[in-house]
Image 1 (cartoon, rainbow, N blue to C red):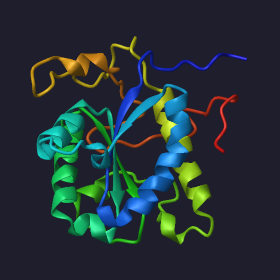
Image 2: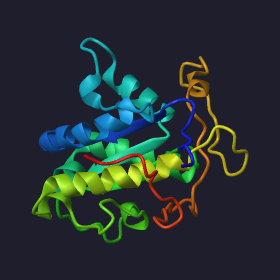
Image 3: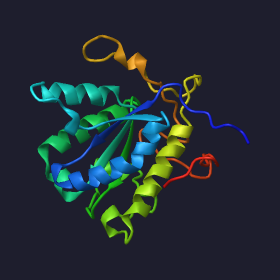
Image 4: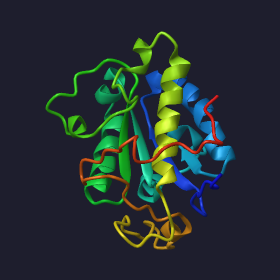
Amino acid sequence: MERQEKPTKPVPLFLSYAYEDELLLRELEKHLHLLKQLGLITLWHRRQIVAGTDWAMVIDEHLEQAALILLLISPDYLASTYSRDEMQRALELHEQKRAWVLPILLRQVDLQGTDLSKLKPLPTNEKPIMKWSKRDEAFCDITRSLRQIIAGLSVSSHTGLLASQQSPSGSGSRDDHVKVPLVNTSWPHAEYDQTELPLPANVFCF
């Protein structure tokens, strides 16, 4: 069996969410924990901000360093000023090919006519998580799709790489993370093809 290749360094993943959806955030984190254990991703969201720090600056730095940005979409998310600011910056990074943005549909919301309507969301059937009779199945669907995307990331590819940029502090911390090639995408409206990137046979979603 061919051994699964993975990035030599974890892919930095940023979670953008509304505080009202924190319970769903926690459920998603549980399902992403295995990807962290496997060394495939690092995970950050604003709940990890340390008291006494400049929270706006910290959020911006983590957004700038992220290769994958998950937007946890709900009516509360779209109504939140903080979340909208994160979303707009994420979409800018997506347009600049510096990050891959994936909307995650938590609850039913009308995205028609918005910039988000141009992006392919998860779960793969575009059914909001709260409408699934078994939410674990929805989260597992999301995790599989993320595995698939990450499986296409490579530090050795020189074609279609995301632009590498310096951190806001000028320390060059971006270079500490994996550079991400495009995988079956047409920027700025990235999509993925499940038939092109099968999951490794020795990895399962629990």
